[in-house]
Image (cartoon, rainbow, N blue to C red):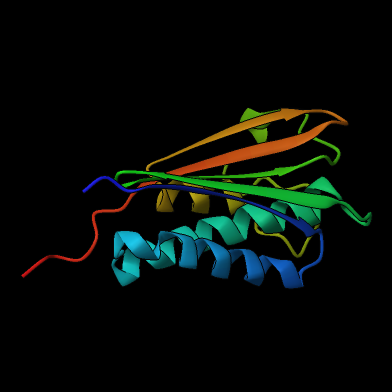
Amino acid sequence: MKTENEFKLTVDSKSINESFARVVVSAFITPLDPTLEELADLKTAVSEAVTNCIVHGYKEQFGRIYITGKIKDSMVKITIRDKGCGIENIDKAMTPLFTTGGGDRAGLGFTVMESFCDKISVRSKVNNGTSVTLIKKIEGKAKW
């Protein structure tokens, strides 16, 4: 059975919306009958991407976060985008332990996203924002 679906969501760049985004993505992938591990992986990656928009993309400013999701068969594609300050050097930003967030940040956001997804891609332009696309195949629960 082929499964196809998509959604679009726009939220304010407020910390409370990070958990809201996780819940939306969780509900969205439910028809694929994900395992608890698959669900947790995707929720964690989404959480990291949304948090990056809030903390790094908009810093101390207000903005909007644009989240889109697509399912085609067992592949899930989630894109989280902001229109914030952008990333000057994507390769450097994706280096484990690199952060522009000061002493309370571990610099592991992209590393976490990469470890929980099959593929991530990052596009960014200084002063125009950043787009992170997370791709994960959902194998689902074993059918007995």
